[in-house]
Amino acid sequence: MNALDPARATLRDALLAHEPADADEARDRAAMLALVEGEPACFARSTFAPGHFTGSAFVFSADDGRVLLHHHRRLDRWLQMGGHDEGESDPAATALREAIEESGLPDLALLSPAILDVDVHPIPAGKGEPDHAHFDVRYAAVTRAAGEARADEAESLALAWLPLGEAARRMGEPGARRALAKAARLLGVPFGA
Image (cartoon, rainbow, N blue to C red; front, side, top):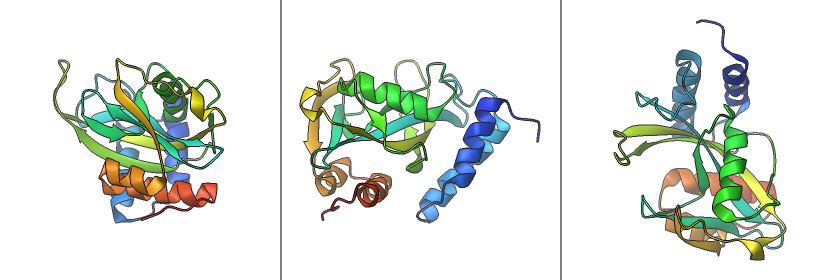
């Protein structure tokens, strides 16, 4: 293996420090390690084979532990805030920037600098891009100004503050349920059914 640049080495170290919660997450972490170690352009949106890193954040209200989801315009699904690297070469910085942009909440802060969860998922072709994978590094963020949330109409059809169990149901995928259960333990709030 060639020497990694500082950004890739930092992400590799964070991935190595992250303990997967189940076999699916362990598989995704292994795929992420292979990508960060083998692809110098792993943060570039134009890297389609096998894909590229993204950063996302589950945004929680400090007042009541609810999570903010947005109804993603292009994918027509309820998701956490997140997206593509725009020169950060740091999924945590990407996650925080995207969460602020998509929620309108300027006071967001990461609950921890540690990775909450990792998930590799397929993205359908669109906007001139082929099918590819997002290697999503997920974090938890918190706000004290939940009432100030506003949707970015270019990205979202709607925003909703939800109890964690309801958020998991709306998202409808095991990786989201796993990440929300981890966040519930961090926040000391009930997960729900």
